[in-house]
Image (cartoon, rainbow, N blue to C red; front, side):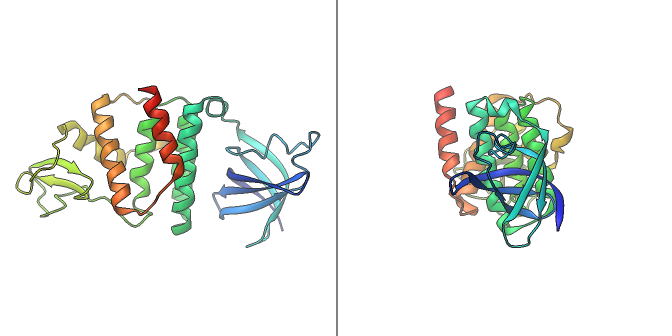
Length: 245
């Protein structure tokens, strides 16, 4: 059955001499494999349209649980800013690897919308570190390790929240505080905002570096402790960050 599906190429693999196989994250079907015959040929119209991080409409012969032959691609956005910037490529690689893991557990169109809107905002040169942390927070629900952003994670107290801690798994109130690092009050507020903000509506991102770093450190530890995910692209991204600092 011939179909046109919206999607984003998350992986590409050479196949035989002139063809390739691409994995496309689609809104309707999750991640599906497509066989692109002749796409490696210099004269093929598919050559430039079947590279990783291509976002478009894919005209295919859909075959459930099998490779779907690709007929043509119509670009939605060429994501030129991302594809020409090593830092943005690194962030996109990490987000792509993360979303592949999420989709393995939960195929929800909301996940697709969050992911695509994050990629589009990255391409608009909004702060990639903040966008990445926003997506990371939102994905915790779909990974089955949601954050409790309503009360102390140790006693349930909804008042006197003084910090966040990745090992504790969220908020810590004054009564339960032991040796946890105390973050700035704005960090606690912004963590909640990250969770609830509609990425599509974001037009500007101006947050103090200290707040950004505290949220990022918390999420790094939370992911390490509770998700069980190890993503090679995250290690590379961290090296890129170190080189820039």
